[in-house]
Length: 128
Image (cartoon, rainbow, N blue to C red; front, side, top):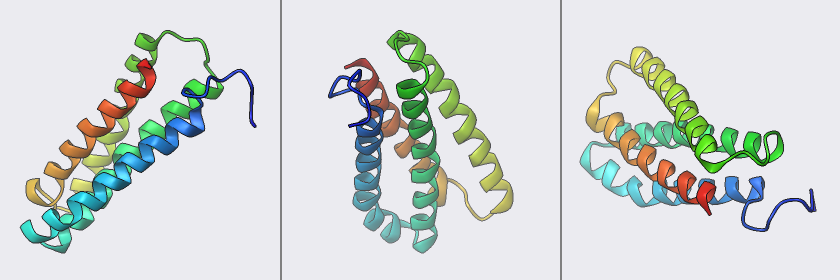
């Protein structure tokens, strides 16, 4: 056991696992629609979108769980939104600049879906 000061529902490793499980499940559910709608490029875009949305969530849970405990949920959610916007925004710009063939059907629609699902899961895990 890492620390006894965490409540069972708010342990950062457990929160990271829940977020990763939800996003991996979402990836598996959306793989077939992505492949049949656009092709293998859409599955690749979905993988990039999943990774881009998972990264800030894991960073947030680890930092808020191990470094800044006791902060109000509103402050944690604000940090979460800003971190997510920066990482996802910079990653999206970098990906679209390096891969000009990725546009709305190949990448952006999957990014929007993953973004809002991960934001919902993070918010629910922070509030409870």
